[in-house]
Length: 412
Image 1 (spheres, rainbow, N blue to C red):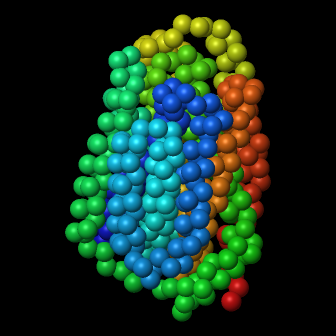
Image 2 (cartoon, rainbow, N blue to C red):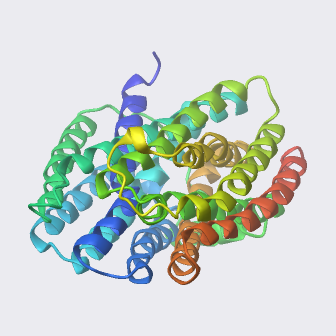
Image 3 (tube, one colour):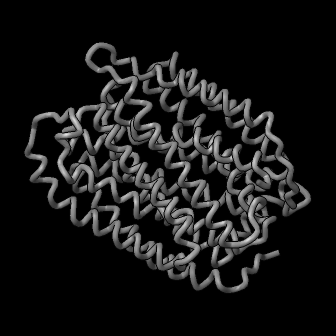
């Protein structure tokens, strides 16, 4: 298979960071339980993860083709390896912030490299959409793995610090990924958009005034607000609303990740036969319908005060809510692919930077809002907020579809 080594490297690195990046919901729950912080205080972890992603993406997106995608990914793995070690020996809420700071910086380098390489490895819009969806699906498999990996080390009854041992395992996985990437052959040529770093950054900023790009980054912002609002708070939601214990709360959140993975793999297949915009609109409508169905019933279910420790005792709503992932899953990769494949390949790295920046900002804002609402009005009511960005997303997706059919002109 052509470029097999590159593709394996891309998938492996994305898998590792799926576990690390999206452990934020688990660590939020752990911070509340172990370090005794409030929901509002714990929600700051999303910002420590996402703001470095946004800042680093802005600074290095245009420069990355010059630096090299392989070097960027190796650098990211080295930084996050150190962050995991600091978490083990720091063992405090302060060091959870340092951990997610390192994850944010590293993931910016990884995601910029991966998104840019997809354009190098594919030739048509359909190939691009298919590979984007499959990689994002594999990313969700990594997230699902986190929901089983972390609880395996929970032991709240006898040792509240035992959960930190998971980071020894993660350090091992990172080391393997580093070695594998180090010896992988990455042969490609990518055209930079300017002759100097400052010229590259100026061209990247000019991308933001291109109508298609402007509408897209708003859409990416809205989607990630929805996704992270649910994903970051589902373990805590399970514990406080459904009354699951810590292990079951985290394991049941894996249903969301598995649903997201399955949804993205299915989307990679369906986009070959169904127009992307129809698929996205249908998915948004069904996602909103799930919230409208589940949330009004939670006040009744919440009357049960006995802690649930077994999956056999989980109420049916505990399974239905995370299935929303099956329907929100296709949205993000399809939006990204539509815009990237409409631009020249020389602009894929700076465009990837904009995707990551506004995705990070959307994730931070979404998690922060849900966290504040969770603390002040309760988890069931907090999730109603997500219906607003869902409605706005449908409007912007229709605009993107119309604009993507036109020739994209980038200011010179």
